[in-house]
Length: 266
Ligand code: 15L
Image 1 (cartoon, rainbow, N blue to C red):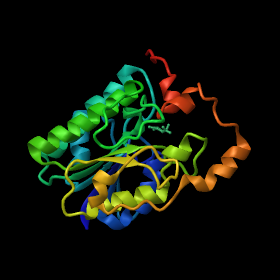
Image 2 (image 1 turned 60 degrees about the vertical axis):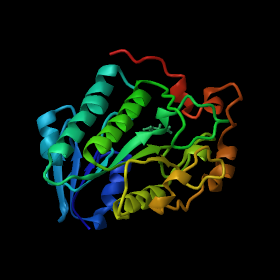
Image 3 (image 1 turned 30 degrees about the horizontal axis):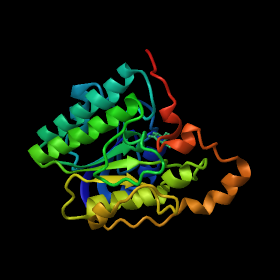
């Protein structure tokens, strides 16, 4: 059992799921976000922190032996916003981890937008080249590279999870391939903190979808067996909307609409 598990971005969609579902992994759960989060429960601590603030991040990480890093900018945005949260924020987090008296094991919420410009006909594994679909995707590639460097140089273990689309249910035809159920995400985090040796793997964060594009054979050693399948929602999605035309980004590229986004200027 972990002593203290830090969940960053704890007020967001996945953060709320983790707050509700990961309490059994640690004696204390430290929840962090820029604001909000309400009252701390009996075994919770609440920390307000901007990831761009080095001293605040050091205090947030101090004493934590596990981190689920969901915090940061989670969609495309002007570079200044991405840089503060996802570039400087990642460096601040890993520097804090390196200097911490207890070396934490980390789950890093990377994103499918690190590989978003791969056509949907590509089948990817951990060795496929990155093809980010915006500043946000580039920042996720940076985060993965940073995690790898801190593993190779300092032995800090991170599971870099290229989260697909994690919502209660898939919302469109693309998500029949990219969807990851909350239950499967929770199961993955449980395995990351259970295995004796983690290393620094790339994990595709998707359920056991019939329409999958991503191959996780490389991380079989984690013992993660996703149980859900977006196919169960195909009939509902077909009834609610037409599939995108073949020349639409949502049918062409794995990153879908992110590939159509222009540069967001500040
Ligand atoms: C992401 O990285 C976003 O954080 C999330 O909001 C979704 O848009 C998801 O990707 C997706 O590609 O569906």
